[in-house]
Image (cartoon, rainbow, N blue to C red):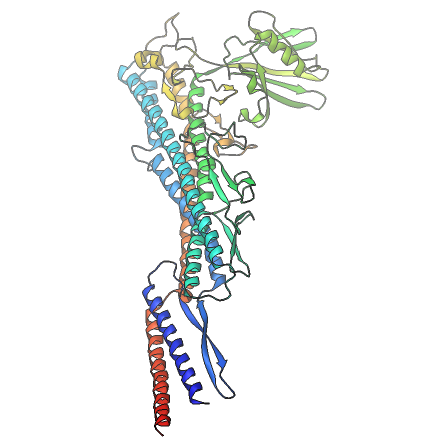
Length: 621
């Protein structure tokens, strides 16, 4: 090796050592910088002649385990999803109140039934009557407040989605910009490594918002897709759009039809101009966005449905009066006649007959409908899985109703209007059908109708009948509108007096006992839409048992969400630790490396000094 080769090699060693010192300096300086990945120097041996070799810096390497990084991104999405759900469930539990506390829904309902019990014991006690009215008003107001709180949570989810979309768009734009900056880079230098760190940070932000899949091409560009395969970032970023609604109510639901939608939807616009509705396609399955959607469109909607079911059942249990049909015959035909003049929109007629050819009993619920645009009604209109629902357009009067029924049951049953508002049905003489039962259920509209039923609860100032019209069901959001009948608040004596001719005695326990029994022990059937029971096996039981089921279900769901969140947090923390073990800067290790470089630098400097001295000797000869 010539002296010039030796000098060149020593100088290369000095340059490489200096680069290593700069790299260690950067590692130590960024030891606490979020997202910074430890770098190491890439050194390559090069030939400097027949016998010599030198060194060259090829770039830097980011020290990370890509497999763990992929796992971490996946679990980060799951962790963010589980954590946000747990937060919402916890807030929902706070809305319901701590079990046993004075502000818990179950306690407030119990106070109402206790007041009814006291009234049944002392019907003529003015204070007992007043206590019933006061406790009913507290219960109604509490249901109003619970509805407002639940819709407030849905509004928070709506706003959370809007914020998440803005964050996602920023992240996708920056990922695409960095892709362009480093595209085609053959080796990674310090500046490129910094850009990749930044890009990984934006990818991590995106993984918190949704489940993603990331691939890298030969040009060091990353392609980002949702877990379902929808591309978010390629050579250009896609763009998320969310048309947030300013107000969310109990009647605000997501629907693929924009004319029926009351909350925002999430669409993705690609760089080529295509548009995809991510909610319709179920493209986002995890992350905060998925959690917001689930809470807004499913969990909180079901929670509201449970309150509405409770409010509706309370109201109808006290106000609905069923009148059995009067038996009638016509030759070989038998049947019943019932007065339907008191029926309001939403009220029903129950019909049961036996198909004698198969000895099968068939049940039908005929529903009065005053808005034909609501027709036809689905069988889920009632909670009973064994009946068939038929909506009847009542706008043409009873004659039109008779025609509709005869068309529906042609050859099996014969309907007629023999007089006034009576509706009569006859079988076909036992040839193929035999009538079993026929009755009408109407909502009591007055406090003194001669029956124990009364409209204790109202829909604001209107009657509550469970009406269905073209705009939806009256039950939707009813818990937020339920009130105590103002006439009762003015005259609590009507809690006892249900007839004016003759006047009900002030100590008559008939109505108080009816109120108590309906609110405490009457067996009712509840729609599966409340999440208690199923469509084929709906929950049947008393109002207190239904309320206990609701509270228990919500508590179990909150606990399960908390356990899932805690478990997911452990997984994410473990992966972060494994990732940091490989990628985070260890100051102690860097200091050890610094000592090695310091020694190497001194050795290379000594070679340079020796070569200089030898050159000086040669020059002096």
